[in-house]
Amino acid sequence: MASIIDIKEECALHVRDFEFTYKGSSAPSLKKVTMPIARHSITALIGPSGCGKTTLLRSFNRMHDLYPGNSYGGEIEFEGRNILTPKEDLIQLRTKIGMIFQKPTAFPMSIFDNVAYGMRLQGIKNKTELNDRVEKALKDAAIWKEVSDRLKHDANGLSGGQQQRLCIARAIAVEPEVLLFDEPTSALDPISTQGIEKLVIELKERVSIIIVTHNMQQAARVSDYTGFMYLGELIELGQTEELFVTPKEKLTQEYITGKFG
Amino acid sequence: MTAVQKRIVINKIALTLSTLSALIALAFLFWILGVLVMKGISALNWNIFIFEGAPPGYAESGLKHALVGQAILIGMATAIGVPLGILAGTYLSEYGKNSKLAHTIRDISDIMMSAPSIVIGAFVYAVVVIPMGHFSAWAGAIALGIIMIPVILRTTDDMLQLVPGELREAAFALGAPKYKVILSVVYRGAKAGILTGVLLGIARVGGETAPLLFTSFNDNFFTTDLNAAMPSLTVTIFNYATSPYEDWQQLGWAAAFILSMFILGLNILGRVILFAGKKGK
Figure 1 (cartoon, helix red, strand yellow):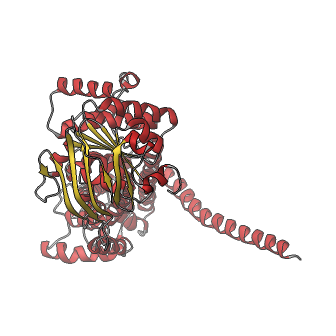
Figure 2 (cartoon, rainbow over the protein chains, first blue to last red):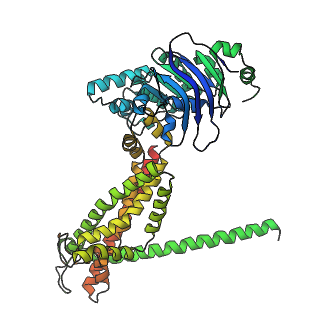
């Protein structure tokens, strides 16, 4: 019954018959989700609270593995392999698929050390290389001008919006293929939100982006494709404009016109 | 009297009683501190830091032996208790979490925290002093270290759990292995709290007498031999205060004053660090 668009361009990820069950739960929280994620474009996931959009997002970098007892089914294809197998190297995977969280997660260290964190994990010690890449990441995240004179200051001194851009700089510094955004602006004011949205759109030239949002206007503003989820199922995936203007499923229509959710 | 008036009266009575109780409790604390400060300061002089113990009646007697011995004992106890306490607390917060084993360890640690310290002294006497055949600084330090562990374990566990889970997830999401997440993110986030726990742990054992009585025992002379009985401020206070000699009693007051100020200072420092850490966030 689901209406899934067939994406013609190159895909970054392929989700096929994906199922996810939380520890101790008898029924899966995600049921038979099949969804292509287009490369170098923005895919938004919308749907009411509890529909599974964040659960799906956290499956792409296998964040659920931090808490034992959860189980996956089906497959998620990335770079030609199924990343759900036990032999998948999660450390490698997470450097390729980065994540930005709902609340800014600046580490308790300097601004510079925050951005350098991922690179240092990869063993980059060369000072000039670190300096150059930190500067580039901060510039790409549109925060360089605000912090260039206080890179050694504690990152917790920044405002919420600045911290969120710092987290984006930290994530893109390791040059991932995919970036996952989990409601990245829900804790921010409108002006910071605008800044982050602009940044997300700029980033798609280099990375494939999946963004979970509560805010339908945000999905409409930033994304190329939108997936509507309901009760653990992907109801509809389409080009954003089409999905919002001429949805194919009745449920989608009801949700975007505010009949529930 | 209406119901409301009655409630107002009951409220006033309860407030008066509880305020009075608080004042009485505080009065004793300040009474103790007041007597200690008056008697202690008048007994202080430079000889205390220059000379070791001497028989009663000698002018050249001091507390150098006990001060150095106390420092050695506390230093060694810290070297034993702090790593064990922090590592165990790390296990509870980061690995054990809500497992059965973790809960059991937490319960046992809480029981250990309220165990009479003399029992721990007796335990160390049985497993260290008797096999060695004599009292030693090692035995005293082990006894104090054991007492320190549950204090540090508990604060470390609590403080690490205060670090938001999102911060850990964010580090994992950058491809950090678990030990790096703990070392570079979780410990940093909790460092003020852990440091406070360490200071409180040191303060907790700094005033212990009972576990030292039959482990490091005491000595009236200066020594740095870890394999022999080691003087400590607390046992020296006990010996001097219960002696009939006026000059020894004076030294006892001085020792009590120095020890109390040390422990008070640690407690205040611990709170200041914790407060500054909170303000920083």
